[in-house]
Length: 226
Image 1: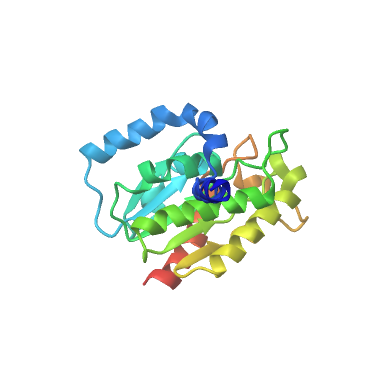
Image 2: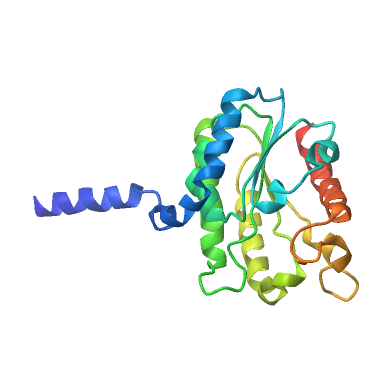
């Protein structure tokens, strides 16, 4: 009997989503998520839209509708969110929408700080997001936009690059899931990130950076969606 209860306990633990340790930190974005939910209740999504979610590069993309035309867009980027934050809120961000495809960009889990995640943890969190999305949307294309090399985080680029490669390998094993390679376009002849594509913080894209980013993203979507 004791062995039976132990087996049940192990099964329950194995089925528990690995997000509990991140839920407290994710609460800082609750206001943003509630704002999304208000928008969801008052706005009608455009037909056949691409849903973009993730961190500040999505949130700050003021010309996203222009840059992604002719694809209609739903924009749901929030704060300086991490992959763990998106994982915690995936259902509340994604499930209210009907969309043709989902694009995800998150870049804040490895920054050079003491609480950085490992590349394995980052990839595992993306896999969790993917599984959550697939429960409701089994066939819609899912795109992960590669974490961009930046001068502000160049010292941890080897770890970021490992996370990118693990996510890419995961995408290649899934149906209708695509990794959008962008890093090479943002590296200059000197082998370092191109400062001219970023604003003064050397982390966020400027207008020329967004134009280049959009061109790469749209080309991949064109090749796989049409």
